Image (cartoon, rainbow, N blue to C red):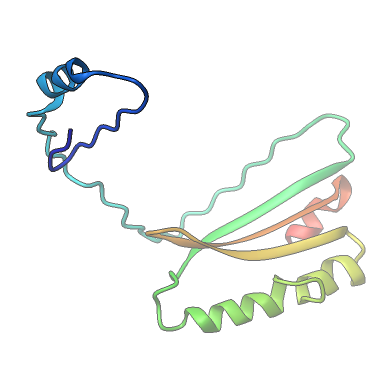
Length: 137
């Protein structure tokens, strides 16, 4: 049974009575027209820090993120190359600074995340609890 907006597949052993029942209930089905949601991203200067303390924890996980230009923007390729240099591979500047020079972490990374209607950059690491604020700085 098929109409413009619904397709039902039936498999296995069945007779014509099954098709008649399906046609009775779904043959003239018309979906409700709904407005597609808007996914426009608005940028703002709003920033938020969330700190969840675990008593006795020896290390903290740090995640930092920000909305950025999307992959259709003419400067996106330049941003992707810059991200790779600054934080997107083991020899990146973030790794050299936070791991090799300061010894705060075993590893730190940054990555670009692309969704259908938005993109963002994320930086992540796990550090010894006493180095959290210095790492963020």
